[in-house]
Length: 313
Image 1 (cartoon, rainbow, N blue to C red):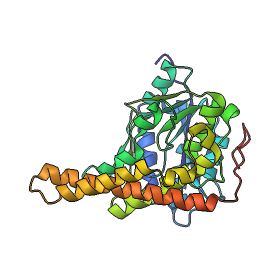
Image 2: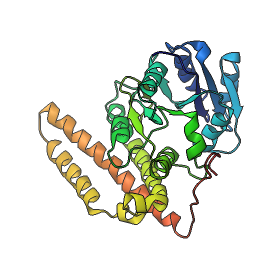
Image 3: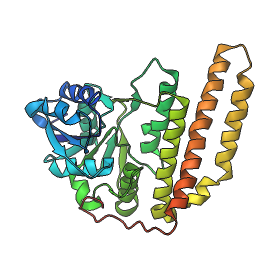
Image 4: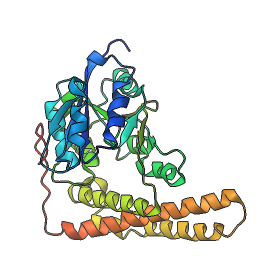
């Protein structure tokens, strides 16, 4: 790296008193010059001791309070406060590796035309089988490298501040998928470019139970239905079309059948594959259910594009 650009790290936090300290400590331990980055944590109207934990860091952390609930509103509040050339986003339930910022910024330096850069989102709970499987729910390499519809995940992303003047901020009317919506707005309206930085690793507290995998799938399905209202012409699919797409249900049926068949064998590797098939089916059923539920709720609503250069409303 020829220079050390300035970067603002923005973290939304809601009722995160027990975990946000791990995230802040990891960012303070970055192998990047401390004078070249700031940490902005947005307390999103928490009702626990989150604010007190944040204040305990004194001048190391800038605390912003945002009463409007939702990660989109919290991130926008933090980005409005940010004063640096680059903005990096992660979440209160994440723990970045010490090289995280440096690797993201080296990738930005390597290609000045790239606006969105992200790295791997791995499981913090390495000893939990379901948590490790949950990495499939946050496959950032696949998301950023998608040839047709790349998108960034806000748990681990860096973008140039100049990009916001063109694209706008997060849509605060969205409760799910606001990161993908911002990515699609940048892609379809402004031909934005995306890049993957494989060494910029963040660890995330993934779902720990099968029920939590289903809930995660529902959230992702609801996000997809939101997005397909606005971008159906670009993507070539509608919310109801995705909810009832036969190919998706065939994959679920195949996973259920293979999982059930392998569950009765004695080989441990086959039994592990059986469980993974069932995890995958559970997550994807959640996606389809979430897509259908949100598609129904979308009926009769309008979703205007946020104004470029302003926080999305």
